[in-house]
Image (cartoon, rainbow, N blue to C red):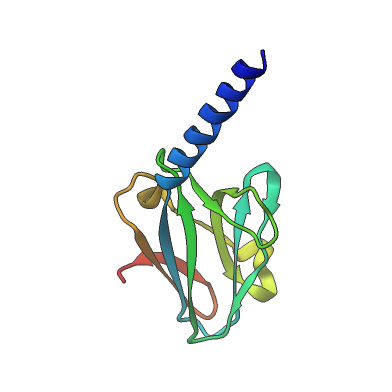
Amino acid sequence: MKRLCCLWLVASLASATAAASENDEVSIEVANESGQLLRCQFLLAHWMTSAALVLEPGDSARLILGRAADGALFQRKAGEARPFPVESLLCGADQDFGSSRQDLDLSPLRRRQSDALAVRCSGDAVLSCHRGSL
């Protein structure tokens, strides 16, 4: 029984190592081309959110995610052993995030059509975020 358990453990570790080596990184560049503060947050699995990224007008930031072999996106958090699955990226005006936030399409990353996305948010009265080119 001990031998069977050890064989299962070795096989599990080998499988996990192989799966980890199949992961790659993808990036999302977010640019605030509006005249207001922009807030972006990842919506993670199980109704969790990441820490908010707030960009001043004219600023940009590059967000790095992991991508599993099956296309699933994930975020690693400092001090956490397990990665957190990413459901979506929400961006909106910081002062009115609840009503201005937009769910940005990450499907090109999931479908492996791209390793990088650019998101441009503009507009002063009404914020509009759209994918652009890097």
